[in-house]
Length: 460
Image (cartoon, rainbow, N blue to C red; front, side):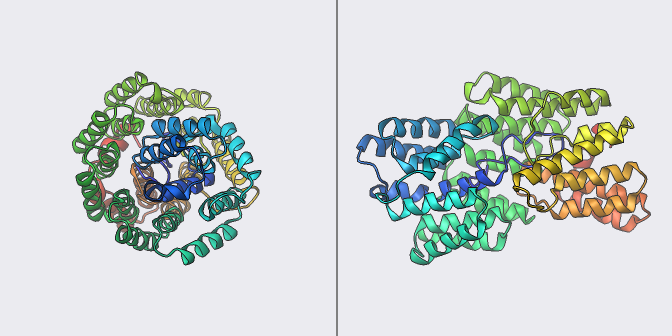
């Protein structure tokens, strides 16, 4: 699980993207993840006169570093009970108040930060508040200038280095991200979560052997934490090494039975490997864990239900399932199979409406800015063009979708493979057999069983 986004939540065929990949959360994750080392080693830099509150803050950040989000939330809420004016705890709490169900609480905290008197705070805390609010308000250039100035002032500060690395990672500037995470390890060798981020950086570039080396090193250093096992499980899932992936997800759950991401990793594994019974069992286990029985599990159940309907060629059921997901995560690909079902049933206008709704959501997220089309939208357009017997145009759309997504985790990675198989089909139907075989070989070289097990099951 990437620490910069607290997880692997991203576009995927038929899955609801268990948490947001919205700009606010990426921004906050960068701020929060960046300060962890400094909190643990420089407690005097945080403004609270309550020793118990400071101790809780330290424990909360330790939990956040390990991606134990429920623990972290309890700790930060306890800090605010003890010291309602603790600004650092408010920013940390935004990170763990994830998902649309917590939007109101996040907004409440943001408004509190807007009215905070920054005068008594440390320089770092003032920076954190201003940087976060600039990002939330879509003042990206201003935020970047703040960060660059902070790094210039504190070139060896692990906080600044971690924040800059996360910024590069979230913006897809992967060469920069790698250099910055490596620099972070030079300055703070014990900040082991940097190996996790280096693993995901390599994964995003398609350097899977290097990704495995980094993630196995992370697991070796921190075998008693759940996240190293979960992250390695993601990579192994993407590469089609399904038994190994299952073992890693289960190992993560042995370490922490409430490490919810691993239940959902098992659910995705069951779906893409054609073992829906594995997905069912994982989500039944999740139901027994209070922290994992909420909205994320409901989205995972919908993912599995969509796969099951597609496997059974029950296109009408796929359409019906859309009504059970009234507010899918903005930017997610939760309705890729629903969109395909509409086309299969001859309901092209409804398929176009799905595309238009996604475009509306993305425009709203960008506050009216045009932005770039999402890989989900580009993929859907390609499928619609393929159904209209316009394979050359479909191939163009699938290529654009491929260029808009990376292998930076199991979820975006499986979507990328899914899209590539559709690209190969479009090229084949357009008479470009050599190019089609090249794309097919590209998929096989990453995950030899992907097309055979998933796409054969779906009949695509």
